[in-house]
Length: 487
Image (cartoon, rainbow, N blue to C red; front, side, top):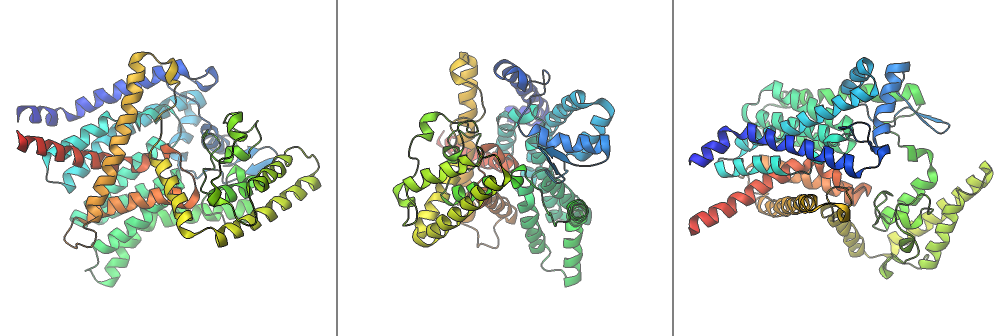
């Protein structure tokens, strides 16, 4: 009991110490094993997405126009403007380098607040002291989110906005206070403008609120739901209207740079249908088999191999057909005139349409389901949690990297087991609705990426990773109670 009291009373101090260790440790790792071009300061690490986030904001501050120049194209909606309220004033006051360092420290504070919010949420949901303390300390000890602190990208801060929204949502469940509904909607709206996939949280949270207030009269139900959705409806409307005036198009979310490269969009459609990953920075991504060697991040052996299972082929295409398709795709980058490029693009679109129709009609549904399930498993289980050359690491750093991977696997396995436990009671009306909400939302988020858009980079799990911590707390408390009874 004395030990429990110690860990509870000193929870914030111990957690802060752990996070400070990770902050310093990953600063050293980044500076030691990243290239010089990747290091902007001792704290801030450059990433490929970094420029996409900050350049439109810098353009807004410098020229009053939220836009991005890509080649000869001006993109007005490359990224949703979720970072504008933070980065814009920092950039205006201090310039890029100092602003980015401050953003890193904002990420660090967010990382710490995530731990504290998980503690508060567990206190609201569970009566088990052991579960609360296990989940809280596991969230502090896991390096998964902390690794991303040094990048000026949305992983850490969007996770903070998500968990903040969930916290206020669960408070609304307890007290039906209208302010909690508003702040839940505000933070989840912000999370959407940081990472569009978080629209799922807004959708499921709306259903959650509708269920919670189902016994109130109709007009009160509409009122509460409107309060929750007010932030999203206002800011999304302003975003759509702004985009229409800039582009004469209805753009509800954003316009990727790839949208100006129709050859890539066409290829992505084919790769996603074949159950592959379309992210070229993933060395095992199927899209790398098609890309020109200069644009791929994989080795030559993979591009010369046959990565396709026989059950993927149809009467309209086989391996030879796909090799020919690849040649046509690569020729798009070698032809010079606009007319030649358009001719290649139309041929690509024609072949892609033929192949997709054949895949849809001839490949059995269970094969399609298997492909998406396999993609889901690749999304969840990876060979390394963060990038650093294992072979070059000293023993301490190798052990840390193995520890991070083991923690990641234990968190995800705990989440799967916890999901089974909760879903077993899905139709039990007396079972905790908050747990049903967390589990169903998390799985919808996962399946949206793997079964839907085909983007499965492991870091995208950040926004639902707090649920994994809660699941690990549940599993740890079960194990603890089992051994306690045995002893």
